[in-house]
Image (cartoon, rainbow, N blue to C red; front, top):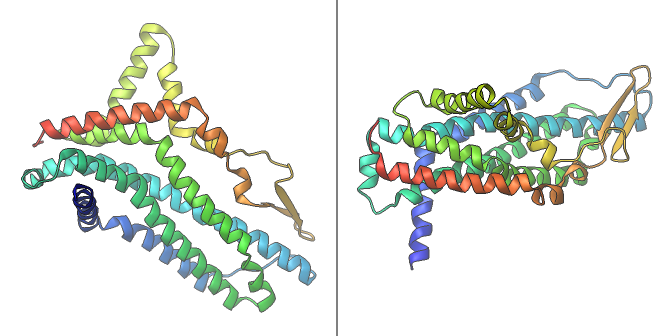
Length: 302
C-alpha cells in the first residue's frame, strides 16, 4: 500500500513538472520541427556518384552521419536545458512562495528533490530521445519520398536504427551517473541561493580553484572539475580513428566519406562502469543531493 502510494505521489510530482515547465517537451519539439522543415524544403544531392552501388553507399554513409548529428544536436540542447532546470527548480518554488503550498501537502521534501532530480536526469533525456527518434524517422521518410527509390531505400537499414536506439539508452544511463555530482551541486545552489542562482553556481568553485592555486600552488580541483565537465565522452566511449570500426566510402572526384561500422562498437560499457572516477563522482553526487534535501527542509523563502 505504501509503495503504491509513493508511486502515485511521484507520478503526480512528475506531472506537476510538466505543467510548470512546458519547455521540457516544447523545446525538442521545435528543434524536431525545424529539422523536418529542412528535410521538406532543403536541397541535397549526391556528388560524383557514377553508378548505383556508389550512390547507395554514399547515401547510407550520409544517413549514419545524419543520425549521429541529430543525436548530438538533441544531446547538447538537452544538457543545456537540464542544467537550467536544475538551477531553477527549487529556487522558483521559494521565489513565488508556492513552496508553502507544497509543504502543506503530505509530500516529503526528499520526494520533491528526488522527483526533480529524476526529471532532469531521466525524464527529460527520455523525452528528447523520443522526439529525436521521431524526427529521424520523419526526416528519413521525407528524404525517401523526395529522392528516387534506390536512393531512399538506402536510408532504411535495421542495424543503423538499432544502433541509434542503443546509443540513446546508453547515453541516458551513463550521463545520469557521470553528471550526478554536477546535478547535486546545482540542486544545492537552487535550494540555497536567495537570488542570482547562475552566479552562485559558478562563483564558489572558481573561488576555491583560485584559492588553491594562490595558496598551495596546485590545481587539483580545477583538473577534477574539468574532467567532470568535459571527460564524459572519453570515459563512456572508445574512439580510434582509422581502425576496423570505420568504413571509408570513396566518391569519384570528391574524396571519401568515413563512417562507423556500428555506433555501438564505440560504447565503452566495461571501462565506464569499472572506472573509479565514475563511482567517486556518484558518491559525491549522493552527498550533495542529501545536502539539497536538508536545505529544502530548512529554507522556505528567498
